[in-house]
Amino acid sequence: FAGLMNTTAQRLGMTNTKFVNASGWPDPNQVTTAHDMAILLTAMLKDFPEYKKFLAEEAFEWNGIKQQNRNGLLDAGAGVDIGKTGHTEESGYHLASSAVQNGERLVAVVMGTDGFAAREGESLKAYATLFAQNKTVRLGVPGKVLVPNVPVWHGALGATGLTVAEPLMVFVSEADKSGLKLEATYKAPLVAPLLADQPVGELTVTFPDGHTQTTELVTGQESPLGGFFSRWMQSFAGLF
Image 1 (cartoon, rainbow, N blue to C red):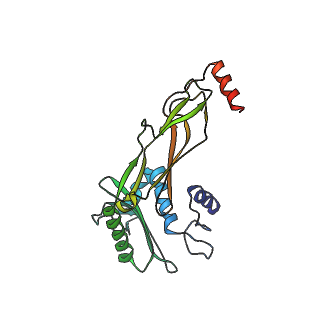
Image 2: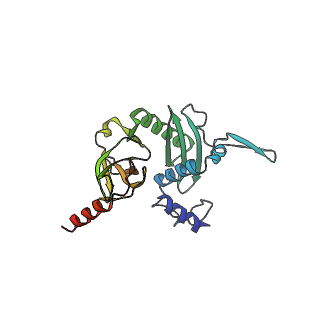
Image 3: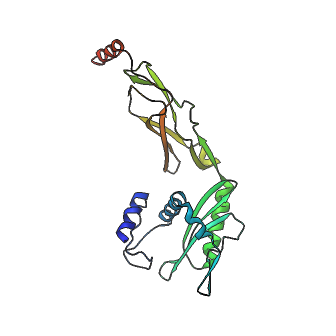
């Protein structure tokens, strides 16, 4: 089972994680990072939203015993709606949580603190800072041409424009916004026939700290195959 966990971790991009058991109990060979746990919680929210209700339950009773959720942020007024706690003597107190404020969702992971109050306090500080200093910026609107006049080989139209299939939404501070770098990558020339909204490349934004986000670049219009003579002329010109 731990092998399946490692396969999934690698697929999700948890490159600094190695599992050796399913329980989470300490082992010299079992390691992870706060960043990788944030990837895992984000993936759970995206792929298994029905599990959210279990992490949000403040208490439940089973066999006459009441079990309390140890995530004290659920009623802290910070928008935290899920979380998963952890503690071992070797590694300290941890908390992976997620909060929503003004339509923005963040995931915060605090590890290695010395108690309940510390892991919750550090999480609240992270949310307060990030929600105050950052906002979501939309880069690209579907249907609006971002890359004009991309050559189309053998097409009735000599060129097409590229747009995004979905907006690239980035959460960034005002200070870092001017440092964002956008790059469109595609293999030119494109070759007809092309459908409208056909994926042909990627739009990548690079943040000042070096991390990236991508979204698909698609054709802005249909590019049907050109006539025989025009295709012959393009092929002939291509020889030179």
